[in-house]
Image (tube, rainbow, N blue to C red; front, side, top):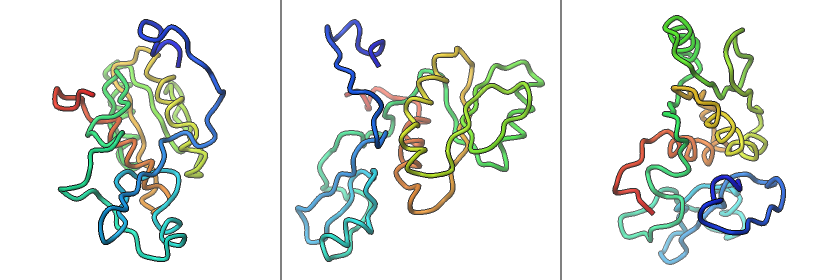
Length: 176
């Protein structure tokens, strides 16, 4: 973390590893229906249970701009691509055959000769390690980073959101 801010911030306080790993859930309570503006560790059903009303997802046109809602957010410098489990092996073999240097963030065992990290199959643990894994692989100087898409289940929503934002090339419109 310090290397990200070394030239800008004179002191960085390190509180150790984050227990959650990804940003918090942001809920807009200003309308008739509570709406999640940014998915995070706390899922919509848990918020609905506490509020006693259904919670919508997805920002509406009039919703306020919130932190972490730009198309590209915490994207690695290495070009990163979301890849389905079915397509991952094909892309790995193509890269190995062409000599392209890749790194892979996966949910399963990687073939011999492939450098990467195996992520936990538990969404809470995956979220906890996601940014550290991206930073680690980004720092290895590969030409491309392949990220295996996690399961398409509600408990993985925040992770899908973060991976989608990490795999979008930043544009001038996304500048903070």
